[in-house]
Image (cartoon, rainbow, N blue to C red; front, side):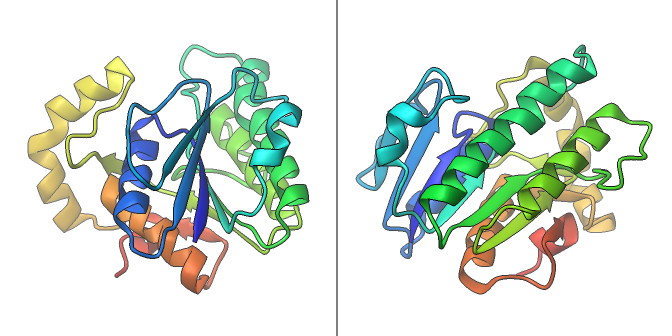
Length: 219
């Protein structure tokens, strides 16, 4: 399996990259982003590209892949809808459209979020934008597409969020996360489980294009 990964420097992306690198079925991982992941591995290729809205200069390096794991995203905190939509919907759809054209047998896996609203009626701005993004991705001519909607994601194996507020949340909430996982298995997952579930849907497919935390945590 040959994988393209967007967002490898984020918390989820770090976890997905780890699982790809230790998976025997993954032959190569191409990480594309504005900055390098900082990892070195015989399977890993880093492609630093400043303008992700314009992939034309690097299109020749984006062909021949079996899967794209799209973990790139931005927090909606402090952003108006237009700015958030540009960084979330517009950028994702632009990249996905290019990949669909270049890779006819590609499975596209997008990290959305619990509470995403694909109907467009939610009062929550981020939920509407994420829902519109999901709808657009599902309409593209991929071999398959899966929208991952995790709830709380626990970082494992030394992985840390780049966002200070998220780091503070995990530091304060960590003693509660274990009991929460036991009591509410559908609300809490881990970076390890997200990465493994992404690889699983590429290999095996899934019953639905929408993948909730309960499905992510299934063995």
